[in-house]
View 1 (cartoon, helix red, strand yellow):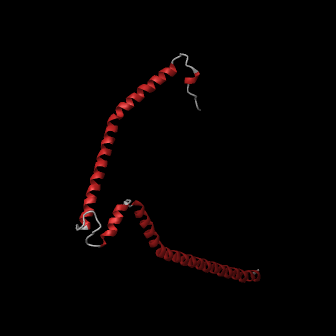
View 2 (cartoon, one colour; view 1 turned 90 degrees about the horizontal axis):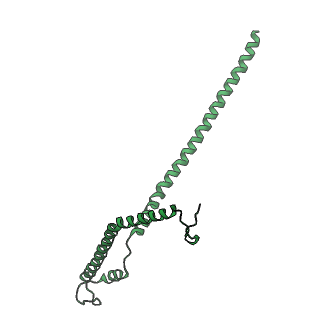
View 3 (cartoon, one colour; view 1 turned 45 degrees about the horizontal axis):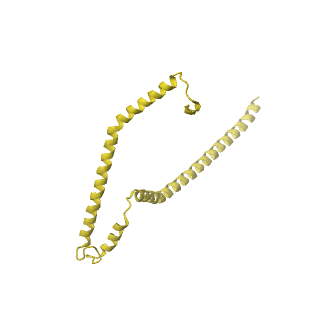
Length: 164
């Protein structure tokens, strides 16, 4: 019997050594896979670091340009004629362009301020009449409900079609 146990021991030790080698090979493969993943992630990070600032810059620029106020063409022409210190082609020859521009801006600002004041006035008048309008709507709705509840005969032309 002892020869039989001795014969089994070498076979078992060979199996154990093979299993250990397979485990080591498997672990090495796992380490290699992980290293490849780390390299891929590092490349993605590098790519993002190079492209992301440009993308953010272009996105921010487009956002800001979409929110810019529209400049009227007369202001654009004033900016072009601003290249010289004085403009002889302006409405007041001999007067610096800056003062002409300021005068037109003041006039436009006054117009805009007047428009804003009128808009605020209309909004406040609409808000002040809102309770009256709501009361009238409630009264008319009550009258309609009262007519619907009555058993009087209503001509079919005046009946509402019920939608379900």
